[in-house]
Length: 188
Length: 357
Image 1 (tube, chains in turn cyan, blue):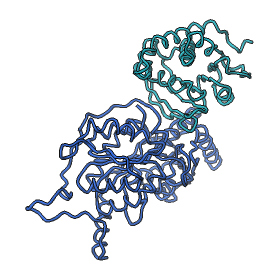
Image 2: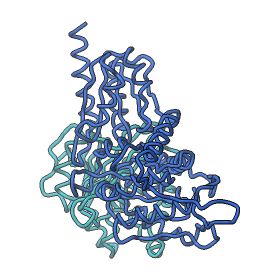
Image 3: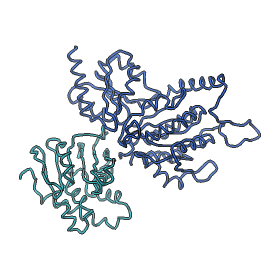
Image 4: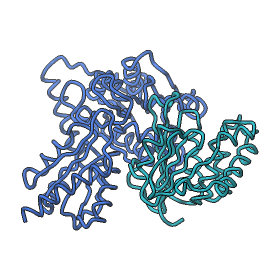
């Protein structure tokens, strides 16, 4: 991709939203792009809501803090309420399906939801739900190549968890498939 | 790398002998990173492993820095706003005793214990002395993770060249964010001679005395004159960055994270055909007065953007000296202005300029 892409990823602390952002950032770095990764780092790190802003750009990035996004990935209702309206017209809003009680009513953006928690349970490991969402996102917005995502995953996942790499890969793959199976919510 | 970790790695590569600190959000990663890496990778002047010590308090830590710096060690300390306030006594003593060291302030919202969110509320404290007495520190304001690295080297260079504590004035966001960095080679910062250090008296010279107590006023004034002479010499170290200033009608002045946000606002304004430029002070002391003074003759107005109630804007007004209006946009207490908020300010100024033409 030759244009810059501005993403917000938000959810509860512990869902892995910061790691998702790091994986995108590391993968983009491997592709010689400019990146910035800005986490929320307040008390939310200890179990409340957490988010990170990731910017991937071919050119020098001015502000790492922005309020309008090309894509928003939300894993809970408060994050949808907060960032659903911050997606630029024509942008993408990706939700985790079971977490959303009242969906976003906007018609000027692309909205779709993946049943990531349900699928993660099927894979016998609910912690990989974030990788399912990430797989789905990157299928819709191929900002970085799948090979580099795997390399970045290895970097972000602590070594003591490296035996879980195959499972994470499987989750990314499942997300990729779901991106095709799940129709846009906008149409409903 | 994360800003705090990049800064800590740079300190190791700059060959620090010692680090003293006390944990405080949002810079605890500096201490954590150094605790893992320093014992393996740093050495003292006598060949023993480098010293990392978590002191009993910020007061303890800064006075350990005083001791280590007096003995000629390359020493760093880091903290965040409330912790830096606690260290001011020690910093004033070191300014008086003319000891080099690097103090890192990863600012958070205040006053008081405040919040852990990013702020630039310590500009006055950093640039106007901070503690008691007539002194200044050279102050470097990074705006990227790369500069968190580069300014560790630059900070030590200034501190050792001028025999003074130097300060890096960052903020919580720069400490927590990740960006690409290029790291300098290990031990690539040469150690200057420190003939004044208290390293044990050989027969060949008199005792070296490190003190900040000069009870006779005549002697104290002499020391003050020396310090003031040093600060005048330090003016040559002024550094700043200019962005799109050649045809600018409105000039933004901002440092650190505010400068990054202002640059985004500049881009948005230029898309709307408003000619905006940016001067980013890199050294906050010495302050880039001349460029701002020169620009004030060429632009219609100046807008200063800070994450405080308006501190640097006073230095900007002194530089502009009435040549054009100086406006201010700020957020406080850990809130960060958005590029759109800054843009709105630019548009309001632009509308006013249009009206008066």
